Image 1 (cartoon, rainbow, N blue to C red):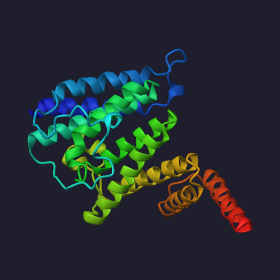
Image 2: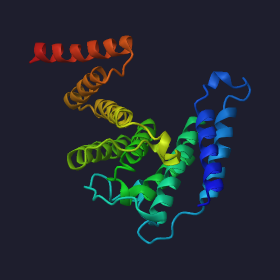
Image 3: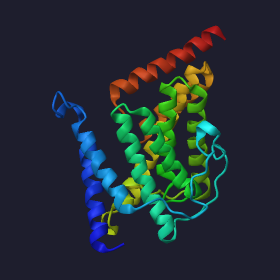
Length: 267
């Protein structure tokens, strides 16, 4: 890709991220999603500039590989396939855009469209999901699909996505372990890439969120012992990584303590 075209893509992507981060109350009262829609336009422009999805047979979405039709990759161990060559790189960059388009549609309450983009993201990344380039983005997409299905009261589907994220994190840490790329880095020049420390911090935060969502799913399924275990793991990790709001953390810790007190009294 020519330097000028790549510079335009990077600029539009960063502008889209900046618009996405603007809080809703800072938009006009009658247009609460104005900035979100502006970000969407830029993301669609980036998608058009990147071109169509790769035509390589291994990367082409299959008719039955969305979860709604039975997602055979969920929960299965992944193989390490590195992102090498223009076809693979193109697929990953497109997956990043699909992820942010998915989140954009979810933020504007267009949940079906959001789901569609997130599933496209997973399809493009599936082959590379255990690689350092893609694991964080893949887990993020699955986490958000888990939340989406949970809000639809489709708890078993939510559970499948979230448990798949947990399994992928554990496999990655066991087999590779080095801090993976943050999704935004696929559109950054080399000199602006994140430090190993910042990458690790962001990846661990993604996993902590995964445990938090799993705790809620297990609670909903009345698997109270398991929910308490995941809640404890979440609180412990928040404390270790200094990533918590003190009042909220204290309330959650007190609630968890009450669960164990009641268990002891009833036991």
